[in-house]
Image 1 (cartoon, rainbow, N blue to C red):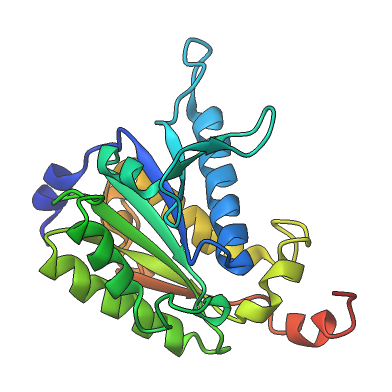
Image 2: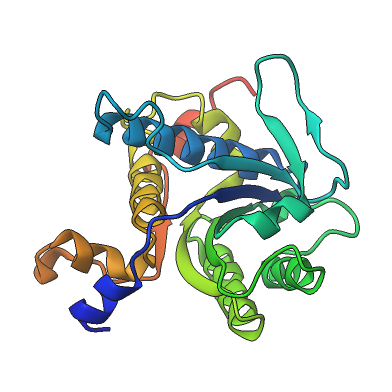
Length: 242
């Protein structure tokens, strides 16, 4: 893609839907919460004194619910899947290992997106970013999941914008209790920050380096980023309480 065309495609999101699939997957919810917190933090850092809220509305979506509800005093509302129709950007986090009965399997994130589109919950042209929590340490199952999602988006006229794979899904709940930029978690946090930048700029992940002016010699140019905890984390996590 040429630089001129990439710049033409950029448009900041107006409303972002955050959905974890399935809804009861703790690993997916934790990674999505980290994405949300990072987006808000970076928006505040880049805002001026006259901009109290520099980020677009973020809607937490529970795709299994038909009605809107509040999760508690002072907490954000949780919206049903129908609210996705008001979003021009959707970040979908997926943890296949936590899938409940009758929910899509590891290779069927694409099927979940296609189902939402068929029900009118995802409008044509909606930008879709994926986060796959992979069971394998090499992330191969997560890459397969995102590739499948990309094909589904093409079939449903959704704008697939790439995504990240976080490996070792079984360790994610403990990993997220470690310092965000500490040694154990830093590689995952950097990948999430990269996704935050792409979402805020309204571009695909493989366009990000070009738009940021990164030296081509150091640019990744990949639509999918695989991120793993520090290699020693697997050994360290086995000694930590669950």
